[in-house]
Image (tube, each protein chain N blue to C red):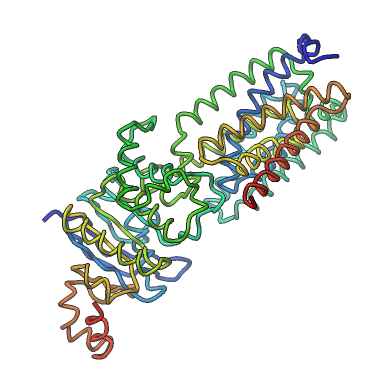
Length: 249
Length: 271
């Protein structure tokens, strides 16, 4: 199996505080990893380090076998960020324009879109069931519609690695269910490697094959089933909590 | 006097041609600046250009020759202060612009003789633009507009969200630097049209006008340029007929279009 991500001794300090400490792990092609941990455990920081948005204090990161410093194949990566509320509601872009931005990584200078790209955008919008919103401004969308738009943007380039930061935190139950089903299909049918940050450990266990439990350091990384029978995790969380985590899905 | 008679004057033709190029340039760049919440960098750099023009006048250069490199350097200094010295962006703009302004005032005082020239730079004098200035403005405006055209998707992407842009392989630091340098050149080019005191309105007003009514990013860029050129033409004609200061009249025309767009947007949402 090809190693998609390889992280060695990764640490990140922010203003004297350690946000991520001595983290090492690897992700193989076709993995669907639920990245869990309480608020402030460093989940989003770890993702931003993997994507080169933050620079590590120490350690190394390899994406698709290449050192992150030299990595240029960004068309292999799709990313859905956490805070949809941070988007400017007055931004004058249509849903189709925002989704097309996901294709930029495939383009050489000067970047220009073709009729084929318009087809890819339409296909991604159809997959997310928002083709009818194509010409609507992003500022006029509901939380769920924004989330679908940004997911369409993340998958429009058919990435091999999809990183999703708390994608269902601001959406209704139906959108959440559709979302989990869709990512599970992507993972099974297209072998897309997925890292999903979530608080919803119980539900994610129904889709993810691995669990990465982070509390600045890695508390657990392995198959979901192993987490449920791990004596170490039983000691960490207590029998009852471990049972609840493992039997919600 | 009708509009055709007015258009026969060479100085009016130069004003329209130079003004139209600078208007399209300011409004295009202004849209990216407004969306990135960097509007005030135009204001700060216009204050820097006061100091830079004073240096030119003091040393006996053509002032805009001194202004372009000095304002570009100052824009890079603002970026460095923000990135490396942990100074907030607005504070960095404040530091650099006030130091440059203070330097300009000291030079003006030391020379004691170029107050009249400085006044024309402070408030602009589009009707006094020479052929040479017109060609310089057209050439530099064309270069900046070409750069905006070539990097359109990079600029669009970082304006929407810098983190997302970074994950599509865009070198966001380089694009930010380019945006600030283009702004510096644009501010200097706009000084002869609207003057140091009013240049930021030329960057901001057409963009916020377009944002009220545009239904896509491309339309916002086009509407911003159309609004800016219409305001320029209206401002020049009205100022000529009623003998008003041209730069200020252009700004007021921009504001009237903004108020109309705002009213239309409110009407459209309540309809």
